[in-house]
Length: 386
Image (cartoon, rainbow, N blue to C red; front, side, top):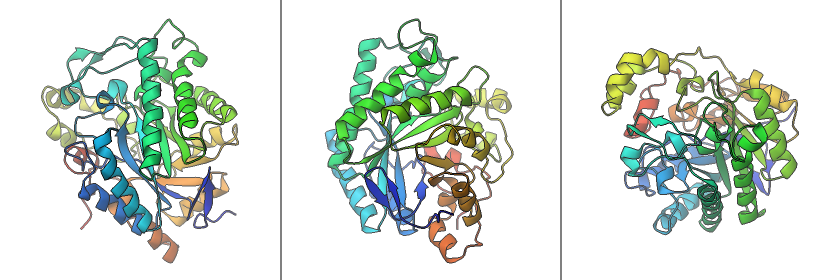
């Protein structure tokens, strides 16, 4: 059986092991620029043994951020990005940049720009309707992804992860419930997938094989009218056939419709409401149970759904969700996954990978309370970590 601690090939790069830090927003960029705090966050995880850490969320345009304090690609950000990649490399790990456009998930009150959505919809954070982009505007978004990938190469990133999940812009176009367009970007799946496929092509053309390219792809939006695994498998097949990505990280959930579908465990409704501005705070208090649902936690909770994708494609796959021990990692390798991704467990123990290698029976100390989630609006952290 594949040893998750052995070096592994990801496209043109070699990782020292098969463990990847999933993109979880760090909340350490108050001026939308890399800070020493952000560098220290990723340096600590790199020193803890991870094969590759992922910087989240690096928007391809200022209006593509979910909030105004997030990183976005521009000349004045490059020096900071370069310092970050150098720090991670010094600890022996690779580093990836998650690139994407938030689309309808963006907060226009914070970014100062109208959000984009595939079809007309009301944006509750901004209390306004989203802007529906035409084909020319979508071509600009595709180009912005390509430009971001080029800049990532310049500053030393080993990989980029294209965000196709959680009903961010590319994911929202994939969703039949959110995408009600009548043009070539709406209707059948082939049209709804057009923007995602064009983006992946543009990124590949921009960077060639200089760095690895992965994509975070939704398997299920967690909403009745959303994308589900059968259509996700077809999108994965198209990406595989075009050769535009080196691996897929499989995810679920919608930041718009069902955010807790990805984050299994406790649902911190009161804590979320406390950090939200009005009128969202009051809205969460009134309808929080319907929006912030609670799903029971179990190890490898996305394995069953991800295995359906594994059975249909040969493309390297990254298993996310409930990877908390050497045993779960071995389970993923035995099921045919090439890599595993961890998020909350590394907030609790940045050195978890080293601990699991030294002590094969060690299990993550993360309790899945999810109280780390509301901290993204201040400084992302595990509230249980000493």
